[in-house]
Amino acid sequence: MTDVTRTLDDIRVPIPEGADEEVAAAVTGLYTEGVISRKQAFSREWAEQLREDIDAAFQEALSRPNGAVGRGPKRYYVEMHPEQMRGWLELVDHPWVRMVCESVLGPDYQIVELGFDVPGAGAVNQPWHRDFPMPEETRTNRRLTSLAFNATAVDTEEDMGPFEVAPTTQWDLPEGFDHEMFPPKAAYPRYEALAQRKYPKMGDISARSALTIHRGTRNDSQKSRPVLVLGVDAPGAGNAEHHDMAVTRGFYERLPQRVRDHLGCPIVETLTPITQKHSIEGLMMGEA
Ligand SMILES: O=C(O)CCC(=O)C(=O)O
Image (cartoon, rainbow, N blue to C red; front, side, top):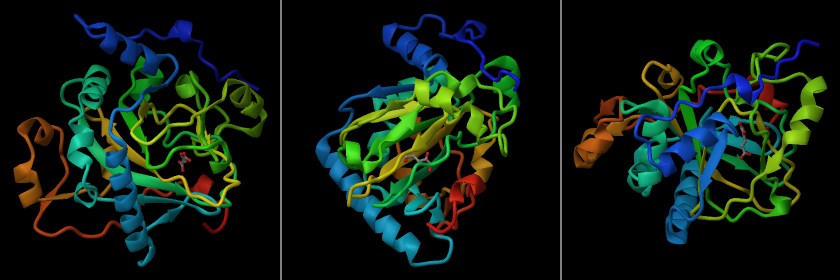
């Protein structure tokens, strides 16, 4: 089998000129490990409210065709609009979120996606995967052009099927990958050897390259583990076209300019419930 692993020696970490220690650490973390986190970025109250908003959006999405997309048995993904989440402004305006986006994606980064995963009781191990194929800019110029932020809505416990990530694999070339996203089974021992299980608590936030190979694991508990996903692009990365996020005019007008600057989505009179487009065929594994 061709060796798909790129060693970190091949990667130059593009720390912006004049960066302080925090910026340097964030960029280095994302270019090396491929995932970083900030403990207690938000209050537990913020996370509790997130849980309520996710629960409401989930029920609404389940009530209509293709409102929620299956990501494997007992596992769903739902995309929503910023206004469906009371803490959205606090999230995107958080100094750590802004710093990470700006340092890695540049000053003109664009917020393109808001959604959540709900791995429920009985969810099984997902196949190891990345969320979309490696863009040419990443393959050739070794630059990350997008980030996924995750905020858990619950305290993660061992039996809830924690998120597992294989650091440094954002650079793996997709040779032999199904749909350029799913590494071959023969590569699993390597991902398992690298794997880190994450146990975020309410209020914690993480940022990763969606290319860093990861999976949700088997949920043996009776609880679900809802987790928010915020997708952010560098200019031209092109992920916005896979998403249908929109904001109403009134909401947009109340946003500070520094947040408006990062919103390229349509401004509408009335929000249309989102029909899921970003289905990942290889994750369906039968009915959700
Ligand atoms: O379980 C998780 O936290 C993430 C699930 C996931 O990676 C996916 O559905 O694409």
